[in-house]
Length: 357
Ligand SMILES: [Zn+2]
Figure (tube, helix red, strand yellow):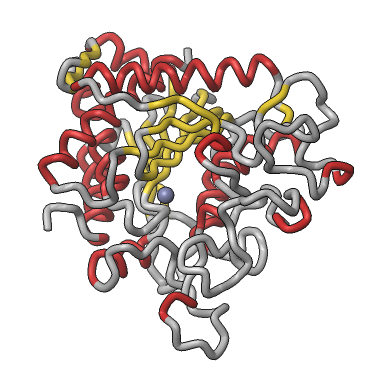
């Protein structure tokens, strides 16, 4: 199997930190996974003391979306090698100059966390290829059904976590309160899972973070806030914190509820998603679509909406626009195709970072 196993993802991250000591910092995540594994992220910075804007990128959240880890490991290796060697980057027909690489890394810090859910990836790569959740056995009770293990990390963040109250009775958010839901069990409470808390810890540790990109598959999309309903910029009081709108959220095309986002943020989110998609298209012509998360399907408790919600809940926190890449057209493309997808998405992510200027 050419995809990296969990030990290989870890060793790739630590090897990059060892090879580029002047440009990187190996970040040990504070919490072990449910099965006791320690995780690492890689911070890429030309000046650890400077207070630069930061892009946080995470992957390997959903166990079966194997290539997400490779996408982030290769992105780190490409940028570090190009910066050190003073070269540009070529991804198929999409090129970046040496100057662009230098500008990117002098202006931004990057924090890359390629494998958020190591227990799940191990299970997907050795037992059940379609496994999605983590491997927490705590909530299934006496059931022996293997589906009653695990929580969907990307429904476990603190954003409209009580979806039964937040959403309209006829809305169909892709989330479940049943521990035996094989896909989208949200967990007993927000941040019940150590893997979710590790992502929160990175947002807390790097307050300069202005953008979160969560790398998933599949559907060839670049999703931006919000995921619970359509966006609106007219009425700040119509928002996820206002209980007056409970039981109304999540319906498409209605006038009862839409989620508030400042116009400048909405414009910035669309622009960045478009830059990502344009860069992807330049590699070999794949067409990724920029759209809000809600337009894929309504959700609660996702990383991108939690990241953006933080500054509304606590104005002392920096504003973080949240994005979710949905690469490719299947979970486990043949490796030769996955290699091309890595080029597509890494070109897109470099373009995204450059567009944050
Ligand atoms: Zn996913």
